[in-house]
Length: 114
Length: 113
Image (tube, rainbow over the protein chains, first blue to last red):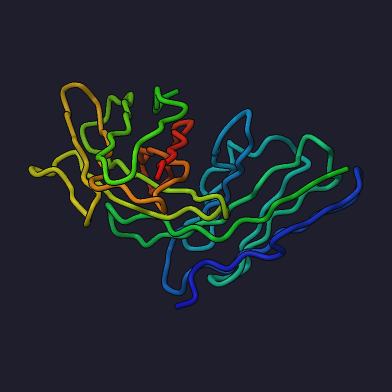
């Protein structure tokens, strides 16, 4: 398996524009997570899905953020409209349903909003 | 909020020496898992080692071992015979149920030749 695949790797956009980050989890994994990493706040969980259903979105900062998982092999995180404070590295991760198994992370998307 | 605390923002170690990275955690759950991840300068998150709260033995994976002291709520990572390639950020994490992780702030480890 190729691992968790995220695209794009880097995104630079102007304030106010819509940004869509994409993720393909590892085949067979039941859980998908979106994390955000910043210098100030470290790694924080935004939202996670189990079997394509959003379970906990309490980490989503505000209504400008939305995430979908239309099928088991694809998820998106959308920011509309984007703001400079959204600049961060966004990681997607997936894991299986077995307890004690690690989450596998994608390479991350470095988002810069100017 | 249940926290993960890594008290060492930075560590400097000579190559081939062993190094211990500290991690303490809050929890009231009887069952939980602890994880360590490595993040090199390239940015990816690499899983290193896992310890379950009910595991009788401390986890080991090659040069990595976990010094798990449940009563003290600590899960320190020990890297033996450090190598230059071990220079990276290291994150301790605990699961909060349903596989989701809460991370510490990380320790930046630098291995000097």
